[in-house]
Length: 223
Image (cartoon, rainbow, N blue to C red; front, side):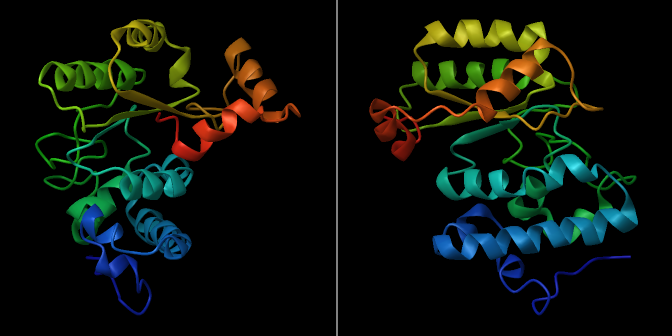
């Protein structure tokens, strides 16, 4: 059963085929886009199956990243990939999203042969930072000073040694790499361990923002 995007039910989402269409909207409209995107994921996945919570939890983040960055020139790498349903819907695959995880349909994870927006083939955790770092170093060597590379990794995947090795390397590579930590206290099951406890502490503690940090917050960390 196909799921055509009804303009009456999804007035903004139905007009978004690629992120370039999303970027034509005004910022106040993005909240409605997020609502429609979340409803669309629920409508399809509740019938066809798939990863519910992971993708619903990053709807706003997905919209924000594609709105701010010039994808696919700017490269977006999702860790594991089960949270990439919204990403797929916004990148030319909305009308075939009902084939997700079906034979000859869309892959359940980002897949390079499926779309130029899927920059890295994934399916296992903790590879995003290393993959994105490789892309960032390559862009630097090619002299692409205007190209941004973003890795999105969850707090569950952050516990792996591969992620820490990539962070350790990235900190000295002097390349343009942004790592977004999606800290939602979830892995396959609720997350556990010392890192989870530390991240919870620093995000819930009442610590005022220092005046020197305000310009960085306003510019997203860019000088």
